[in-house]
Image 1 (cartoon, rainbow over the protein chains, first blue to last red):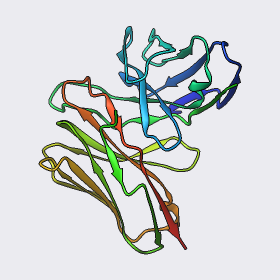
Image 2: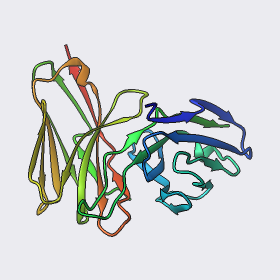
Image 3: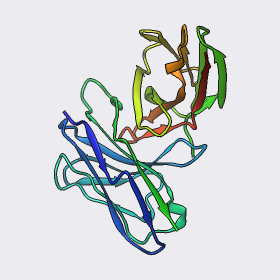
Image 4: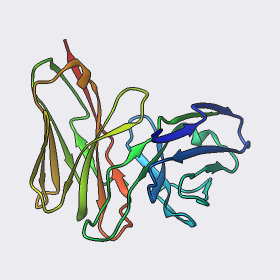
Length: 118
Length: 112
């Protein structure tokens, strides 16, 4: 199993450019999410999905779009890059359920994408 | 806003000593998780403790949870140089689709 893969590993954008960060997982996880990590801060949730066709906003969704057409893939789109979006972006996946085990599950993280916007 | 806050922000100890990190949170939770992040890498899951559990062990790791004080601690015994990393706690609020809220982390340095 490859686990969670992210591409690219590094990216430099100019202000106003758009791009898509790719994320894929091969563990058949229902739950996928995108975080950004800035120096001295914990992870902040951008968007998440609890299954194909279902997405929702996290704590810092502005300037980002997501879609979930398959269980495996969860791309993150930057619509018009701004310097404030300079960050390290992590994709994560996990199981998700509301049965006997309520609550979050162990998250599997990708290696991250380091994005710089000039 | 941050749900979990780790304390201390940084910790430097000698190899072989024990390291203790604390996490406090604000609202009722289902579970609390601890993760490790080596420099420049993704996060790796260490332990998940449910709200109805008080203590959990995994190898040299011991996690405690006190829901009355809304706090958790992570103890690493007999530390090794390879334990040098940042450690994060994450909590999922009840009725939130289990979104995880993360603390800013504790940076642990193990001196040889």
